[in-house]
Image (cartoon, rainbow, N blue to C red; front, side, top):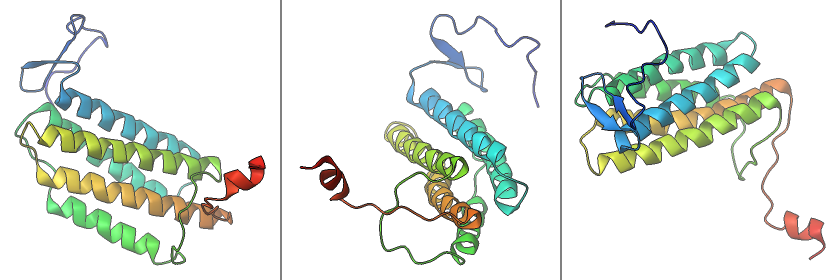
Length: 188
């Protein structure tokens, strides 16, 4: 690892730019910098979920995902660097298949919620989808590793599956979307 900061604040970003790992500076509203922030937020959401989970396979998997997200941040911070490979994507797919195997078939849309843990996994899933949209926007103007967007796409699916698996492990039921529910309960 390169130089480490001895202070958290550097004052180098006070004028609205941020330093990249390659030594260049970019505006803080640059699409690449925006993606870096989105990855950070996703990693934080996963950290929140981890704080609510008991030791177990979901916790171990999410801890590994956090490290992968730092790899993605490193890619974004160093344009042209590629750390995410097809193996990362394949690993997420295998995990999704493993956790999904024990779940009932999905025939309806599920409302996000349930326990605090399940809701936090659903929040991470929604943030993950936003990360994906930001990466697609970035790809319109700058070349990027195609496996990174694939990884994020699979991760959002995995987070959805993990939320279902956690709900099942807690003995909680899933609440299915009913388009007529709000009208029925308002008296319209």
